[in-house]
Image 1 (cartoon, rainbow, N blue to C red):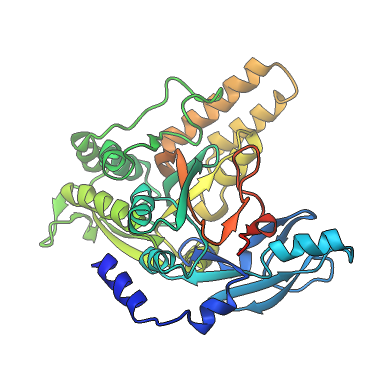
Image 2 (cartoon, rainbow, N blue to C red):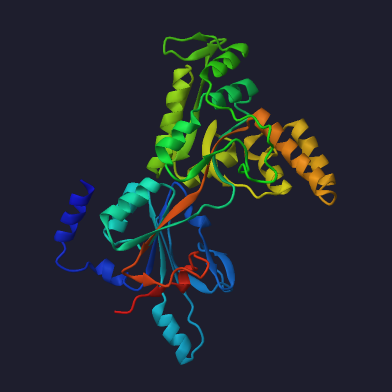
Length: 396
């Protein structure tokens, strides 16, 4: 159906639209509202990284338009010599950040040549674009080291602050099934913030393999035994029910949340999925107005990265044992490497036992769709994408 609609749309256009002609010299970057706040978009330049939204004389570009749906910037010209002028002619005149509410609308925009570049977390989406058009190169690149998808819990929630409940939730997720369904070539099941080949990965960590029987036992031990007429566990008249927020814009996140909901329903836990934009999720987290949230985060292999995330913060996770472990680890940072390594591993064992977050998977790759008809020279010698302003328009 998608291919037919694209063909029909092209057939209805006797000539290029005025909008397409206007964008012929621009780089159109497609972004998803569920993954990016327009106020937080940054761009890498030769002078460093800059926030796109807003004004500033020190920036090498000017913002021409700034709305929740669209950001437009134009780089300031180089020196007045002929060589610089020739380089400027080959570069995009403007960088246009176009926001889409769903990945379906972004995919359609790419197939219709209305967006020049987009990044996707789903291999299936990349394959769909590759099958639908030959005008784009699908470039798989490594995901950021220690990037991880996880469910974070609010410790102020009267149910989710119970460790037995959080552990039961972990045992009731079938991570292998999520990997098989959605990541045929590109993810590792995760049990902690670092990948298994990290020097800080603790070998004795609990993997929380799928074990619904264990999950039920934990819930019973915490007093969740009866069910109401909806088939949901109750304790003292209170149902075991909570909300989970997730990225509204991608089918992948919706599918993952659906699979988790199915498994939790099987042990009589009711979870209410609520899709939101990235900015809405961030506002909820800052206000503490959430129960659980599906998030992607990248951990540095440093003590400060762990301490920053697992100190109270938006999780409201305040563990005296963990705070003591952080303090002890700091004493060994400048001493023997093995002693510091042992402390880092111990910190992760404490986090693993408490389950303030439910670790799901480490993605291997992200997929980049790039308009080959319009652009060239967008990859550096190391195989990475160049900054946008260094991409070159193809000569007519």
